[in-house]
Length: 144
Image (cartoon, rainbow, N blue to C red):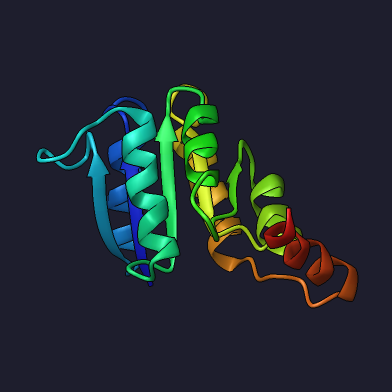
């Protein structure tokens, strides 16, 4: 899978996200502080990664900033993006299952290596629910 990854700094797990996704066999496109030629501010970096998803250049994205909040807000401004700030595997699984999230937002401050592995396991294994109510909720997002 092609995954776009953005971070506003190389602190915390930023570089490890990239190496771990590559180790798992994914093609990774980097943005922000992870790409020397780009602006590294969280709003700009997260937007570029989210646009990769919305415009079909990537299937999913991971956006990172100190708390993860700004990265998720910026990504969610891009049409067709459903970014979820995940701090644990349960939240990552739920975001994929019930929200059909296509962008994972992470906190560089709070995410440890162990928790990152658990989040990525759940996120990458997750599939959208086919339950009628869940599908209706995700479909309704484009009407809001």
